[in-house]
Each structure stands twice: as structure tokens, then as C-alpha cells.
Length: 366
Image 1 (spheres, rainbow, N blue to C red):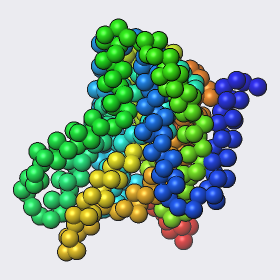
Image 2: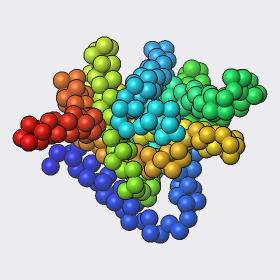
Image 3: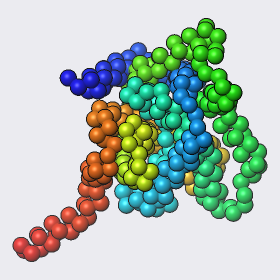
């Protein structure tokens, strides 16, 4: 059996084990505790080890900018496409999707698979690219959310204490354990230090924490799976469109920059990450501010359903891509794959035309 396929099946078994553990979780706080463990300890340790094992160059500073371009492309394309996929213009549902679709959460949905299939070097590159994504989801999407809130209130004034809030967001960005680790690792590399420069007990501890990354994250994905039948078709249309658009953007980047090998595959996988929790946090903050006489800004129930469905959807797509290896990084494969992903949304768009055609046929027979 293909080694990549065997690895994928092993990962799926771990996800299944996590799913079976759901009945042992009595409270959401227990699942939240696992998530905090991953994002605050295990993931930073993994990225720290990966960065200290690769040579960081100035050209890598382009990665956060490319991630920001990806976020922006997903956002502006969604402004045009989402109203055609069943979301009324200027509705809470549309605003909810516009905030979620361009966000990426590589920490839980991509990093463990990048580490296992592509190695430490590509994981380090993905971590640097995620800095740009964090700026987008933490700062830019927050400003977008607040702008919509004040527009709904009918106010044109600036957001109160914007400078203070931006400072708060900047501090939150720096306080993220992953970002702190990236800054520390880059500083160490700049002064010529690597993993072997650390005391043996420190290096051994970090290595052991990093080794927990894949099994813990896969179990968490299984424990977090929560299929909601309500609105599932609507959400699936959006996620298929998002995945197809991401494949197109990845293919264009690979063509433009002449990427190949693991780096090209990393480009594909990074763009397929699940949606981030941060936009939902922004939406929740806005709904707390909203007064009873103010029109609804976001649909929090829809946002929760998207978060619940996005992680398993992204996991399946990423595992499928990595199971095929570098073959899937070719634009000649990516563009047809993107066309397949948009078949479901396209079928929805063609429904009115099909109904009109059937009506014409019935009228002609009559």
C-alpha cells in the first residue's frame, strides 16, 4: 500500500478515536481545555523546533505578505459570489460569511499534517506565513466588523477609542504564544543560535512537547466534530466554493512564482485551512455592544455551525491533497480540481435556469 495512503488511514483512525471520545466529554470547557493546550503549549513548541532547524532568510519575509494577499482575495471574491449562493444582500448571514470565509486557522487544521507529510522546513514557512493571516483576522476583520456595526446604528462617526482598541489588538497579536515563539526563534537564529545551543534538558523538553502535536490535534479534531443538519447544505456550498477558489489562487501563485516540490504543495495546503475562530470572537463582541433597537449585525448561530463544519471539511481536503503528494501541486491538476469543487455551488446557481427550462418544456408540451 502507498506509504502516504497508510499514513492518511492512520490519521483517520486517530480522528475516529477522538470522535468516539465525545461521549466522555461532559462539558464544552473540557474540549476548550484541549484546544488551549494545543495552541498555547504544543503548537508553539513544534514551531520553535521547526524554526531552529531551518535557515531563515530575508526572502521569507514575503510569506506574511502573500498570506495577506490570499486573505484579501478570498474576501473581495466573496463579496461578489456569496450573494449568488443564497445570502441576501446586507443581511446578517452575508456579513457573517464575509467575515469567516477569508480567515484561516492553520494551527489546528494544517500544521500537524504539514509537519508529518512535508517536514520541519515547510512547517517553519507556514508559521511565518500565518503571521500575515493573524494580522488580517485580528486587526483588519475587527475593523470591518465594527464598521458594519456602526453602519447598522446609522452613525458615521469613528469607532470610539479606536487607537486604544488597536493598541489592545496589537498587544493581543504579540501575546499569542505562537507569535512570541516565532520572534524568539528568529532572534536566536539572528545571533547564530540553533536547537543544539539550548541546554539539553530544555531542548529535550521542547522536543517531547513537539512530538505530541499530531496525535493530540487529530484527537481534538475528532472530539470537535459537530454535524448540524440545519443549514448544512448552505454551509457546504460556501465551503466548496471557498476550497475551489483557494485551489485556483494556489495554482496561479505556483504558476507566477514557478514553485515546485514541497513548497508548491505547502501553498496548496495552507490555502485549504479551516476558518478561524477570531472572526467569530469579533462578531460576538459586536453583538454584546448591540442594543435591542439596533438591527442585527451578525448571525452567531450560523457562525457556530460554520466553525463546527469547517474543521472536518478542511481536514478531509488537506489529507486528500497530501495523500496524492506532489502530483497535486501541479496547476494542470489544481484547476480541474477547483472546477470539481465548485460543481455543488454551481448546481445551486443553475437551479433557476433549470426550473425555467422545465417550465418552458411543460408549456411547449401543453
